[in-house]
View 1 (cartoon, chains in turn cyan, green):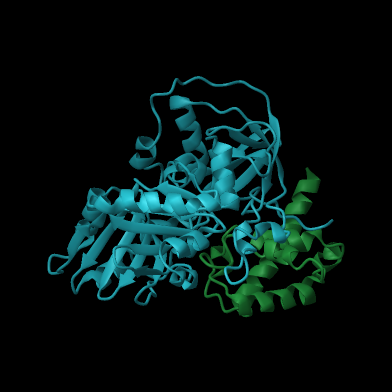
View 2 (cartoon, chains in turn purple, yellow; view 1 turned 135 degrees about the vertical axis):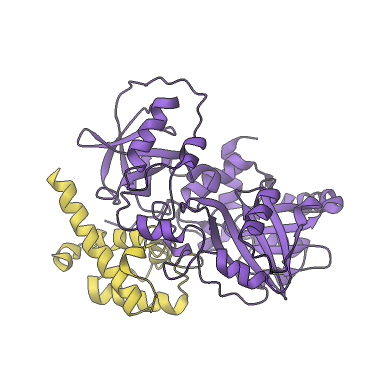
Length: 390
Length: 101
């Protein structure tokens, strides 16, 4: 199966994937809420059955984990990516006061996480589980008899994650695949999910959090508060005064690669962090850190082959490390130091900064109360590429 | 290059007005500089709802003269994704220059 087929399933039908990098912890004990309030950069406002998306930061304000905090009765669940279960537990324990009583259970040690994405994911799941799923709001979850279903956002489409006991995972997978046949369900891998996240400007901690970047550069300020104290808050407050770059989407007809330079007026103004080909747009897309003075949609830029290895690292630091904080050890440690330090001369290719998201998601126009996958041909949906008549 | 700078200046004006509308009309408790332009307006991100969408439509029409074709309401849906896609919509309107100037 091709990558394009996988992306099409996510964009137009339903796609099944496993989430091996995802961790789910259960936190219990009377001190959990105060601990979470202390380490979450956002103000936590969640009721039982609700989820709130946040980040766990290091002291420099760099994202370590992309986290959903889920209120589950008197307990909390953490659905996280970016840290292992051990790393996440360690992060929590480090932030815990000695008098606080908190029990941490790694649910992913004996559970699997299956993910369903696509404009008809709700319909498939309603047949696999129950029609109750249709009423599950975004950022909410519920427990079934032998599963927990989270409604998340990974690709801009309807997105659900199922936490199921590992010894039942095969049974669940088979059932989903069997019912999924009439939905043209495809198994998709991490690369298809990465591309769809990129198209939708959904934060991908593995691909986007490169080097010394913080929520300020990554357009993730909505996930942080400047009015509370948490790991990284002091660094963010300081950096807020003088941060220089913003992550934006860049589109081009010519291939772009991670590490390519973004140029305006014959000088470097940015660097591409995360690139891929958009099959629907029929062009290359990249998440680029661009000088904030130029980081505006519709600005024409040029992309030049980048420099890999040590010189590339120095270039990256030169671009994103221009601040009084200097460059952290993490920035250095996170780079690939094994690639050869060879500059690619190459030629400049025209590109432009575009508005996010880059896809007019079908899920915006599919109404679970009125539409079905079988009847999809009876309705004319808008193009996946948005645009306004000129 | 002056064209690029003029374009950036025009977009900044629109983005600033849109941020102001979110703060004043929709009570988003954020400083303008905290409102990143590519963040989702609905669902995650700024967390707007359908009532906010109606308010935004009214604002777009009164402030920028944006008219949604009756036959194609989906065009608006596709534009109400982020501050930047709203700005795209505003800047694509024939009257946008007059309003922005």
